[in-house]
Amino acid sequence: MNFKAKLIKAANTNKSWLCVGLDPDLDKLPSPVTKSLSGTEEFLKAIIDSTKNLVCAYKPNSAFYEQFGAEGITLLKGIINYIPDDIPVILDAKRGDIGNTSKMYAAAAFDYLRADAITVNPYMGHDCVKPFLDYQDKGIFVLCLTSNPSSSEFQKQYLKNQTMLYEQVARTALTWNKNDNLCLVVGATKPEELGELRQLVGGDIPILIPGVGAQGGDLELSLRNGANSKGELAIINVSRSVLYTGKDNDYVDKARAECLRLVSTMRSVLNLA
Ligand code: OMP
Image (cartoon, rainbow, N blue to C red; front, side, top):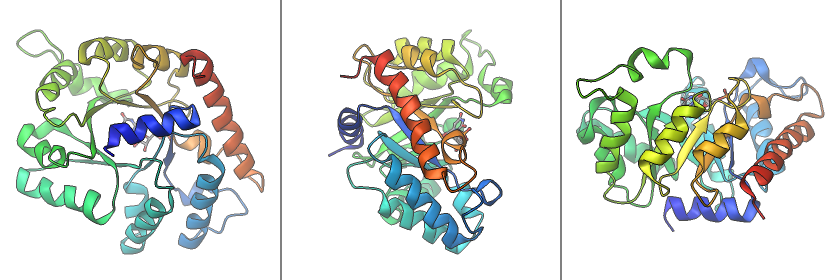
């Protein structure tokens, strides 16, 4: 089963387009969790156990594991392996380099870590993204319009054809989509542009929408503008405001309660029966 089919199946089963971001930060761990690699592993596994029937995907961000060196990579591999097989894993690594190097990044993500999808940076052009897209069953999330405050510095610059760079990224990326595995990243902090981009790319492209919670993105507007006409393919990622909402022994219950709150909004906005 390819990434998109696996994603839609998980979303339908759990009636949810929530993706929980698994971004471990020692400084933010709840007080009962030991501030160590093994404590982090226990924490992440407890979060997965308590949220796995409320999500359509998980998204570990590689940086939060790389900070621990080789043992962090082992932890990342272990966490990907721990996630139930029917829930897709989006590896957030924002990779991209000359083709020959991207091939190695793709092998690391898909052959070694066994992720189902990855985030990539399109700045270097098609030959740098192609080695990822060549993995037909994997989802390739191209950064289009990011959620951060400085995203407009480059992404909202006008090109000679009077198109903003982020819009050109979407148009050009569509021409790369020979294997029907192209996906986009658009921040929840940019809901209007998200709506325009959904119109532009059509209803078949999954869009990862980070920025709800700690970054202040608008959940309802992101769902309305990011979903297709069937109420699908708007993947709302939330990391910190799910993981670190509980500071005490109740952290698992609090994380689950926050997911339930987000998912109940999704169910009503998207009419998920
Ligand atoms: P929270 O702000 O804690 O919910 O985390 C957001 C997650 O999404 C982090 O892992 C970010 O690196 C990632 N992200 C963004 O916040 N903004 C973007 O535009 C793109 C991403 C991403 O590619 O996932």
